[in-house]
Amino acid sequence: MNKQRSLEEALSWITDGSTLMYGGFGGIGTPPTLIEGILDKGVKDLTLIGNDTGFPWIGIGRLVTEGRVRKVITSHIGSNPNAGRMMEEGRMEISFYPQGTLAEKIRAGGVGLGGILVDVGLGTSIAEGKETVVIGGRTYLVEPALTADVAIVHASKADPYGNLVYDKSGRNFNPLVAMAGERTIAEADEIVPLGSLDPESIVTPGIFVNAVIAGKGVNWQWVWEKRAATESQEGPPRS
Amino acid sequence: MGMGETSRDRIARRAAAELKDGMVVNLGIGIPTRVADFIGEGIEVTFHAENGILRAGPSPPPGEEDGFLCNAGGYPVTIVEGASYCDSAIAFAMIRRGCIDMTVLGALEVSEQGDLANWIVPGKRAAGIGGAMELAQKAKKVVALMNHVNRDGAPKIKKQCELPLTAPACVDLIITDMAVMEVTADGLLLREIMLPFTLEEVVRCTEASLKLPEQLIYIP
Image: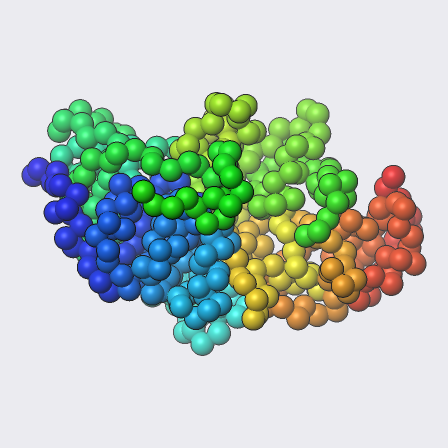
């Protein structure tokens, strides 16, 4: 029943070559303590699945910037020039999907479906080579579900069972990702006693969560905070 | 985009005139975001953000930002009365099933059939798709904002798009630094010209065929 774990114990599930799914949208809602822990652990050749590649020094972008990533399945890399450069140099493979299609592929993986049928992208290059089906006279792309070895999410509050509540727009991909990991690690800003979360307000039921770790809070400047121009591109050196 | 501040503001102001009271609107990143700054008096619009905010409000004053309340570009916003949060799957459900009245998007190329290209230049750095395909394909009205020509002076409003499409036949209105054009069943209808540009200049800078209305409007 008590899923509280140390950072080290939770991170033991993430190893070289792991497929890692992450919550967050433009850095907001990506678990900072877990990202820091993955960097410190030194794992490499990760395959990432998530909305975007963050900013060079915010969110999942830090793993990209430090060269720990082999492949990314995502919708947008525009806010992280390092991701674009590594793609150009052939050092990192990127598969792009429309954002809503990506969200539903992840959700499908999390809810035990094989995939989704979607008409977004028909008539564009992203439909090329993909299987289609016709239902009720309308054509849909078949998009297989996505799952991962490990999913990492950020919650504002968690209880020991892993019930999660998110923080405003920090919710974004987190509830979807939380369901789609073979193992899911939730980093919470606050871990509250069992029974203290209102069952009506819980967004992710704890059954999907395997480990709860205590977050140390946001340890970076948000992209909109004032900083030196060079830092905003490449980020500060790691301490 | 290499656009002067004035023409960016001018494009944003013209796009804001398309916002009607009661609309649900999604603004893309870049110049489209600025459209909210020019919203007409007495017009109440519900802003949708694909990272999971319905009824997003203006930027907070400096020092009052909330790190967990940001728009799809990662910049801080506020909410207005009646706002709700949701996950990104639900945010895209709203788009995909046709709940968004209007979207304003940046464009690299638009064709005379209203095809939109705005996500990748092959062989160059790609920003990625983001929510552009869902918005372009599913919003009831799609307004494309762009420079009329590229850095080399070549037209970006073409007979056919050369870049990979974001969505075919989706654009309803094109607003550039030179003109406003409506996509109609039989091609592009030139509606307005931004002064000091002339009709001759607009036609010369447009590869697509332009039909002329009975009354051409000149915007000062």
